[in-house]
Amino acid sequence: MVEAQHTASTMRLADSIAEQHMLETILEESKPSPAPGTAKLHYLLATPFRYRPSLGSRFRAPLDAGVWYGAEVLRTSLAEKSYWRLKFLLDSPQTPDLRPVPHTAFRAQLQGLTLDLTRPPLVADRADWTNRKSYAATQALGVAAREAKLAMIRYESVRDPERAACCAVLTPAAFRRTTPRSMETWFIAASRARVACAKSTPGQTWEFSREDLIGETG
Image 1 (cartoon, rainbow, N blue to C red):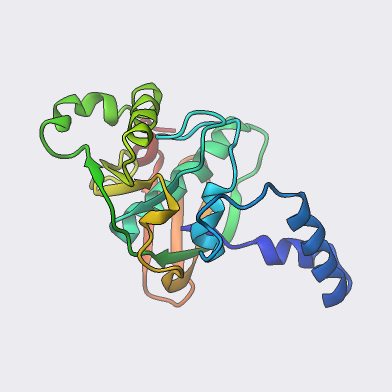
Image 2 (cartoon, rainbow, N blue to C red; image 1 turned 180 degrees about the horizontal axis):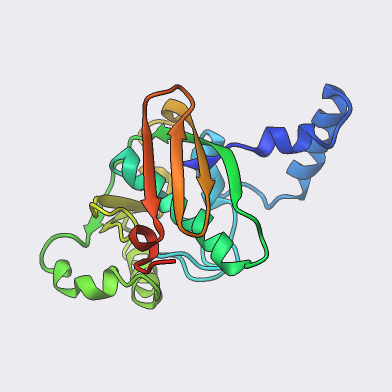
């Protein structure tokens, strides 16, 4: 589940398709070089490996190599993305509620040696792997998993109320196909109390409360 505003963002700054193409080219040249092993991958699969952000994530310490995160069911992907929309609001008290923003949901096929934190013996340390606020234990595990040449880490989502599984992909070699499948558009709107998700075609929705996502009420 990724935000789908990259094209719309540059269109707002350009007066023509030619100007937009020029702006996209300038932006591309300013980015880091693609990561090794991603040359044939669709950008939705390759992009997370391209950057080393100063802010860490659950299995990636600050400035470490990129990690691609996915979930086994759509609801979990929506919950994980909703958490970050909510967190943005909570970290910026003067920001108004976030209007619906388009996101792209898609599927990827994976393969490779996987560390499963939901099964024995590693599930014995579940409290470390499911800490809602500290990523210290999981980031250290991510380093060890890379050193052991593992492809993926399967783990329990702490944002999905039903605690379904997610997967942290450590290497682009884990993708069985070079392109994503089953792409669809979802709109996500957020307040400080809840986050609402709706598919672009009517009928399917999910809503997550602040308590669902971070374990506290507004």
